[in-house]
Length: 177
Image 1 (tube, rainbow, N blue to C red):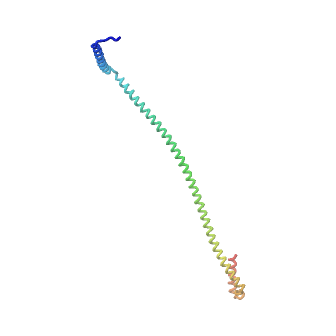
Image 2 (image 1 turned 180 degrees about the vertical axis):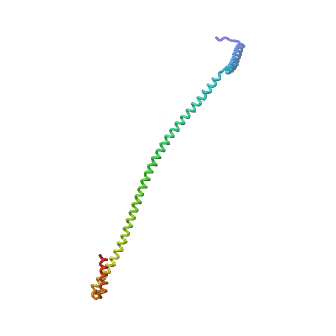
């Protein structure tokens, strides 16, 4: 089936193939240079603009993703700030209530201190009056005992002294009342 070809023929076909390939490569390089010279500069500008557009789109996508992240962070921060504001408002309300209660307590304490001072003063006055009354009572008791024993007899006292004694009895009677 296969025919035996001489070896020279095989080498010649291979060499022709190789030379053809080399000539076509040289021709394509020369042709591409001439085509490059013939190419419209607007095509280059379009290609560069397309490249810039791709770069700008990728930058835009990155910026959008960054923007989305920042918006999420902003929402979280806003929620956190609102929570803190709510807590601060509650604390301020509690503090204002505590201040009002403290002011009321201070006023009540002052009133109670004033009342206690008044009562202490009344107590001191009452104790002084009680001592006076006890003293007058003991004097009156002693006078009564002396009259009962007969040591003190007002009928034997001269008249000037009698008037003085009546005045003393009136003072003792007034003090007892």
